[in-house]
Image (cartoon, rainbow, N blue to C red):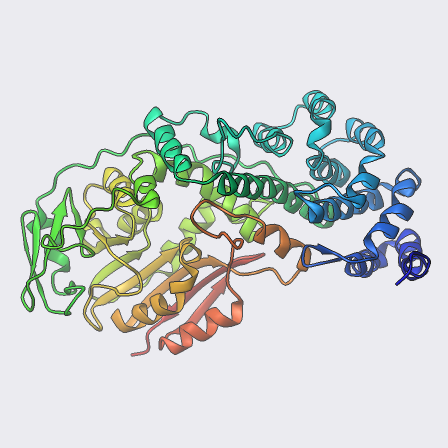
Length: 513
């Protein structure tokens, strides 16, 4: 297709967007976007569209300016990490964008859309940050913008610590920094550069998601970290026989499904030679005392053993994750909302109440207060998360285990909760839900909170653009609602309640009597 034919093809779409009445503006924008951008890639119409639209930025109303800033950001990001013709054409009017931004307020969608757009021009870092300083951005937004405009120092790379925002890690302990440095030393220069690019894409995507919401729904509300202080977890010793006694009827060997006998410091299998260690109220069914495994070279294992990390996740990361993945920019799904849902819908029958993928115990605490700590058992894959849980609730025992193979007997659990966790192991999700169905007693309830993929291609792109070290290297993957519904049905569970706005998937299911 020639340049002339490209221009002739895109011109009607440009004109339609520029002249659309308010009730048709979103639809006209979508048609324009689909012609120039598809799943994060540019089409041949992108450059003629930008050439036609950049000069019109000052001639349109405020909302159309915001749409254009979002569009330009998407197109420029599609060329990253290179700087192509589209980027050059958009950057040519940087002064105009800065003037518009400086005169905007955070109540305007344009403010957030320009924050997203301007995060794509590191060569203009000093000019952009100078204006940002006058606008008094919140710490999290300023921190992301600063990183988006930064350049990689190959001799001292700072990578992998950008979510929820880079400045949240300023108070990291030296031991935590050494874990980072040890991991970085294992990477090739190419891997360092790739992670740097992933980090930049993630902070820009966060700004893009916020802009998306502002344009279509209004001003995003500020996010406030949980007021629980981040501290080093120091779990206490426990009387293992006593603390696991309420759960011995349900517990089974993770290898042969035989019964376990609990002694101080050890759970012995009656059917095989496995002996599972117990330390500070944490039973590890993944490692027999006879295995002699060494996880010291595994970065994720080392990361999980940072004593403050689980508290950090609960205080900083979870609220931000809920905003981006649940589209919870209005804070409708608050911790109070979540706690109320659990308390109202948890209906255990006789037996252990399992907190599946319990993490640092934020919601284990709610369960224990609702049904009594003696009924609750927590399970997670990461020992350090459970160490935080045990620090938080020393009266609740824990199991280090895999959700794919739950170490419990059939029809033995009175209720199960998996709250804000299933998305951490998406490949295992159908197996985990099948295990919940196997282990629940008839009449027992399963409460689940996770997130579903947006059907909107733009918002879905922003979510998928989050890539984290050692996980989600292909982008953050959530669930399709139909898949979750099918997996629950296949597990023999009947959904009896649905709740949660936006992209939240909050249900209560029951195992039929």
